[in-house]
Image 1 (cartoon, rainbow, N blue to C red):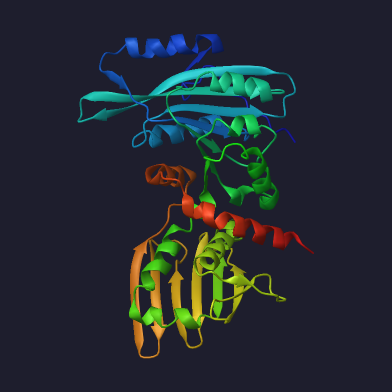
Image 2: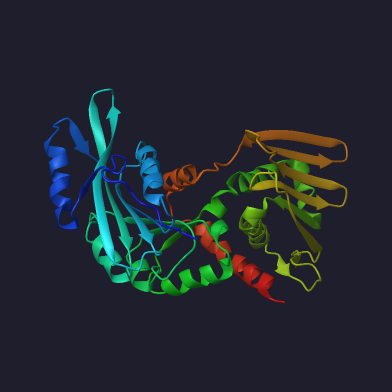
Length: 357
């Protein structure tokens, strides 16, 4: 099957096509031709993909993303289906009006590479970073041999979407091995970000006196998820187990825990092919329960507590779904993503547990 994608020439969506050696010169010319333009950058943002046509898609994403997040954007598409080495490059600027007058612009450099690219990738891409700015690397799709220790060592924040991986356990091992000498690497996973409102929901409902009566006697957890977003469900479960200090217990079930009080906790993970990434989290303690649910197409997440003689409901916004919105949210929050780092070892053990026969 032909997986190649031909980028037209000229290609106004990517800007002006230039020789790699002329990139810096052409960027300077962009600012010289309009005194009303001001360049703005708070970070280097590299967006990497091996998907045919990704450059055009990601250029549109960057146009929207730079409205709130000033950066030097470097877009990379690698075509592994063409064996002959080649490289094409484009420069442009995404500009947005401030107070209706001055244009604040973010630079974009786009690269299209074919053939064996490991060394050329590093030299070409990292030769055009703003050296005094942090590097955020958004890796799209399956990991490949491009993700090496030499690459990860210069990255400050690595954004991934583990939901897109065929073998998440192996891919997380690859990241762990590549980042051994970069202890400050901040890892952000779209799968984790998709659980935000559910985690906030759990925290908020247990501020309620009725819900507090559920927690000590908790004996069952049920999570309903879309088949493409199992990792979000497992990460949510890993978070619950880690925060509540549950220990693993022997069981025929895929996941089973025991609470600090010695109560056995059973777990059911169930797919819903027509629902959102996460449809439901139900925590049960005998006849008492706490529900966090999101219906397909809903604009809100519902939180509901059901205790004999006591029922209460509240609403919160849904989590974003598009990659663009997820990245914007991750960049806006910043931070060390320490909670994800905390649950990551348990989540990885749960992934490995599923691989065992």
